[in-house]
Length: 134
Length: 136
Image (cartoon, rainbow over all chains, first blue to last red; front, side, top):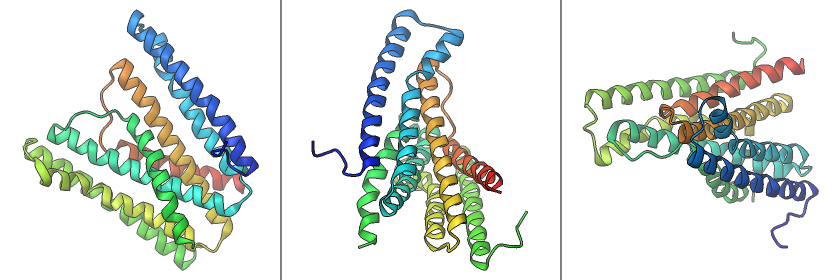
């Protein structure tokens, strides 16, 4: 498979991330169907609401493990910088949209998209950071 | 609060960093009041421009942080700051993900516009304090 990285840490990252995403889909399905059919309340509702978030938090732990295990300092530095740019971009988009939503009646977009935009901006920033070192 | 052992570069970076955070807060308050006083009647490109304004000094803060990391000669301090920024980022993302599912399933009110930025800055600062203290 071409998408498997060359480094040991990179391979471990892919092998850890894939099951985490599968667990996310499974937990999301469970939470969605229970909320849809049984309308839970109280502690059970809180537990079910947080359930799909757990694998996503796990995916952040997987990235953290990759950063600590990657022996190539250059690759690690690129990743860390791109993560900081990813967060900066995601928080900026979230802030702009938050103001538009609060004051100009723009449609509501879930805060979940901060997480999605983090990965998008992180991916976009990587080639630019690499280009800087050429 | 300022450590006397800080180098000139560190002192200057800290001042710039604080100034950009202060500017973010001031612009946010200004924009918030502007929209409120206009009774939500601002639309179109002006609304977009005004909504974009508070994020500019925040992006400046990110640029300053990356510039500082790139130029800091003390490898130990650089590693601690990078670690704190990463921990702050992870805590912020975890917060947004959990809040999003609570918002979706439990119908709690939406988070204020700049809440994520506050979480990131506070989490990073606490993480840096803890990291530096535990490394002593």
